Amino acid sequence: MPPEKIPQMVRLLEKNDIVIGSTFVKGGKDARGVVYASFFSRLINLFCQLVLGKEITDYTSGFIVTKKKAIEGSRFEGAHGSYFIGLLYRAKKKGYKIIEVPYTLLPRQYGQSKITGFWPYFKTGIVYLWTLFKLRFFARIIIDDPQGKSIYLKR
Image (cartoon, rainbow, N blue to C red; front, side, top):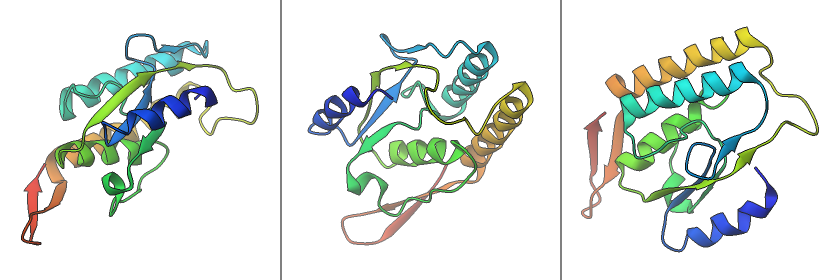
């Protein structure tokens, strides 16, 4: 995520609860030049939209600016970005306002990715699919009502 995008994302919190950096909204782009990485990223996000809803285009971005209230009590569990899928799904179900801003994903200049090569991307995709399955069929969303009682929503 280009650092110059962060002030824009913070400003957008005035009218939103969560701001996501996205390569899939208009103006966003994946310029890493790794064909299978772009392919798997797009494919997984299409599955996410199919299973969890089309309101979000980049469930695996990982670039987020959020109000504290939107992530309080959230569980950051799972490998790689699967926690991010769950975080966005639960926030959306709780009614938080989520917006995406475009950015260009560039090749790394420093360090190494945890996922390199075709098979690691494929395996990560399987983990993400399992996350989708669990969220869709087994997740419970806890919403506190005005009287202080917790309401459990299936899916």
